[in-house]
Image (cartoon, rainbow, N blue to C red; front, side):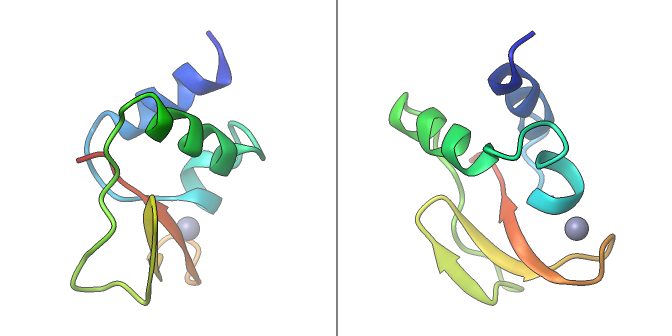
Length: 76
Ligand SMILES: [Zn+2]
């Protein structure tokens, strides 16, 4: 399976995923892959009550796994 498919599979649960904990071990280019998926029509959430910053295809918020404020992705 391609790295894009692997990342899609992680995101398919429609939960927030920390890029450090959940995505970057699949591909260090996860941001580019997310941009690609968005171009192909995937809709990413970019707001949450816990968000620190808002991005086009995600947010930054505190991660309970790595205990840092990191970029998070979530499919709508
Ligand atoms: Zn994390």
